[in-house]
Image (cartoon, rainbow, N blue to C red):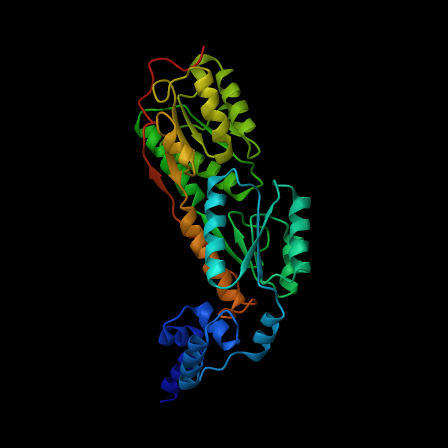
Length: 353
């Protein structure tokens, strides 16, 4: 009997149950009980009646803390060249708007000083929460100390101060390399991000693991790591083609998404046929990958799914559904291959002059 009573009390004090019985979202239920003007009188009355019927009592101290916050939520990202970031920004903004919040977008260019400045500005604005692609653990700790919820996106800092949403980067790279090996390629090059960044480190790890699992040695001369820029891709093509013909790659995994905008034009400029002379797989999808001729095979990291999860995790913290002090968790979004026309068999001779 005691166990049943405890279970009933747990349900009664669950905002999810109030929202479900009221036929509204959790955010709308929370705003209704807070007396928000963004909710119609009819909806507010219905939610209040359901809350009273189930015995739900909002946490007074948590509500006081939340009402002191602005309705602003920060999204701090490195660039909008990366199509995944653009998709994520659009979806997160839409979900926040549905919950009565406004998105403040900051683009850091990967500069730690700009990242820190953006985070401090959001603290001064008394933001309700922050989603960040970055690694400034000191600034994160300061945000956490102020009770502002944080969700890390795409990169895992040394110390988590909030939930973290990542792609399954290593698995995605392995899928790509396995496909190239299945087409007979033995010299597979990779263009990846810096090892200091989660995606750069883990995608390179997946590349190495795939080769080792297939009994192939990892040729370090076929590994080019650099900043997330088109120039990195352009320089990588030059580096690979500067090798003696017998040591050049016949296939490339462009695991640094921004570098694809250097690799693809460089190969076209040099009249290197894809996939006749060079097979190519790029990491992360974008419209240009479908429009390119031939259309480019990609590892899809599912940014829309990432965005939905990021928005949900953040709003659970912002609304008090989950306490800011609850231990953060790391979430991995699975990747999959989208096969198009850029992968073929090994060419009869290595590419380039």
